[in-house]
Image 1 (tube, helix red, strand yellow):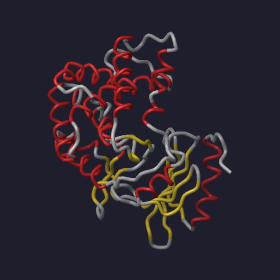
Image 2: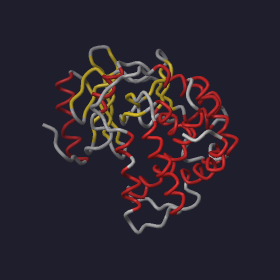
Image 3: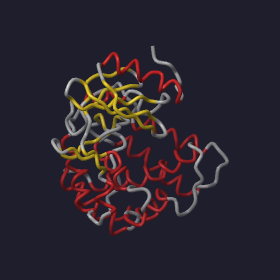
Image 4: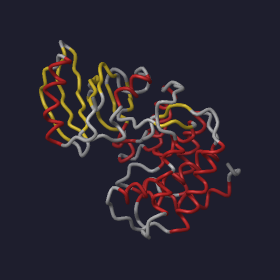
Length: 288
């Protein structure tokens, strides 16, 4: 039975049990803010065990990866709530490096290819993009003024309109951006760490538009937004107007989530910069 919450200690306590049950010899471990990762071997196969520190967006990541069947995403060999046994991607370098190295067009094409390889899974077992809109409602109900009120209102209205008018919803990765795409010498570029959400595929490109987050000058300009959007939508056959509108609304929602996570928001926040860059482009597209 899944524990409602876990901490760093219990994650470390659960690792030996998972390694034993899955027949893994652990060679090294490291931690992120949300997970404990172990690299090791199962027979002659290089594998990784990922243990969640607390119940959250990625608690059912193993089940989600299994639904995609390894197509465009890391393969999962076994899973329980809060823990997954995964193939190890080697060398495991992140797509972020390409954008930071001046190869952003190449990185954008790779993201489009990863999305294209992920199958159109139909499921009702995951949150919907509609349910994620509650972040707007929670923020509006507070007295917080870090994000401009008009920007929040515009993004909220547009997000709701997009939810109500979307077509062919499917299972999406939910956070498909540069940090979550790694290179494997055998399989090429592969997505990791899905959140899982049901929505139309135009929603999926939003996360890619607002990354790499530490260098907003690389993405928060109208020229870059238009170039990335053209590459993504043309390769995937998407509606550019809807993809752009989702990108704007998601950028504001992303800033709201940062507020909820305790981060300070200011006018130079990367997601706010992106929203402001997209804002004047919206009238150039048909209404969603």
